[in-house]
Amino acid sequence: MQPTATTTAAANAGFWGVEIGGTKLQLVAGDARTGIRDRFRATVNPAHGGAGIREQIDHALRTWTPSFPRPHAVGVGFGGPIDWRTGVIQCSHQIEGWAGFALAEWLQQRIQTPVFADNDANVGALGEARCGAGRGGNPVFYVTLGSGVGGGLVVDGLIYHGALPGEAEIGHVCLDRGGATVESRCSGWAVDRKIRERCADQPSGGLARLISGHAGGEAKHLAAAVAQGDPLAQSILRETAEDLAFGLSHAVHLFHPEIIVLGGGLSLVGEPLRQAVAAAMPSFLMKAFAPGPRLVLAGLGEDAVPMGALALAQLGRPPAVGAS
Image 1 (cartoon, rainbow, N blue to C red):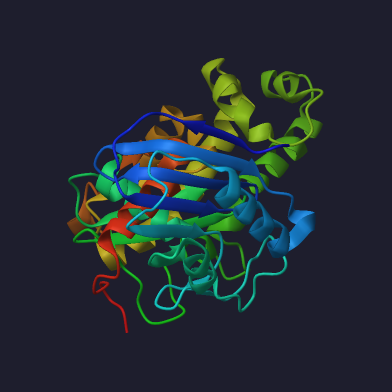
Image 2: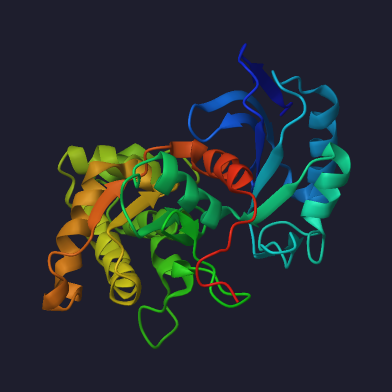
């Protein structure tokens, strides 16, 4: 797929944000207060590796014409572990060719402006906390339910990092001693697989009819099947919500967030998912913490990481909470 660029006339806001994921690349211009004004978006081909994405970025820098071509600073959300202090990537779990790459330095040489890079879940958390559904809350915990499950914690408006290489890796929280994790039960691919397996056993149900003829992305039909009253869909939603609530209960006991934001593709199931997680959560919390944090759906959608990247660019390199 060829990249597309959209530009609107706007005053010079002075910041760029970059999202580098496993499926898409975005460059945006704007600021965290007024939002995104210009955008360049391209589809990533994992087979081309990190080098292919870097070629796409070079292409964007040559052809993209935002309303202000010289930003004061650039923020980056990268889809994998990264040393936020140096901008050096540790690895990518989805795309080869990134391990050990000095991303911030590489971009800074091309744009000739300061570049600040962090893990995309952290950056998405910053976006939702400062500009989205978590605004006004403190602390804010963000979980993104996509092809994997990631998390981020924002305290006093800053990303919590902890000691390197630690992040708020909610996806790797164990749900039992057998190795089941939040990611293995609540990621998009995990729910897709569960739907396929259950529908194979119950092929005449409403959910089975909705996914018939579709390979992959079965979870996107879950909300419609729940709305139709399909028992299988309701059962899968309840199980997923209980697993997620159990995993999030550990974040509540450790960090006491005021707001938990549910983001990522699976969160598009919407209010039925939010309500189910909220209903399940109290049973996993000590009574002193009842009723628990406020659970909300992400407000920025696919712009959580780009908006967080703009906020990161504006913050520069503040003293991060919990950093060593």
